[in-house]
Image (cartoon, rainbow, N blue to C red; front, side, top):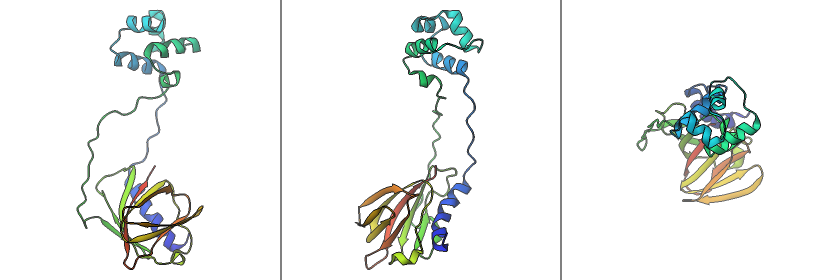
Length: 210
């Protein structure tokens, strides 16, 4: 990858390396999942068995992992719990509220200058972010300044704050964007941004990290 392209990709890598390693999901225990769903409704074994049209002893054995239910039993369970069969095998989402928040005052972001852009990384205090927000001043005036396409994992959103930019992309015609205009695109597709206004344009960029 050309050095200038590597500069922008490095911005994405910085956020990933500052995060925590992703944990592999644990195998789903169907019996525990059924018990959680039943208790979430406040039902006793007897009540849940009646709703599902199953014997209480059968439901008890399923919850305790003492028997593998047939597909017909799974259908009855799902109908009784008012969910779909696939939802029986879907681990519950983490419902806890993390309460995370980070405020970045103007000019206090982490500076990352490249030949073509000046980046100011925002929300730097948060680890393991799902998105990377940053403000960028667009120095480049010609596509040739990049030496090739910039591309990286994820999706990207840009919003023009000042000036006029020209967004080049691998599969689309170049498009000029002015203050208030925005674009959302697949970042694995080659892309570059230049300023076509007299002054350096500035944009807000948000890149997904997952």
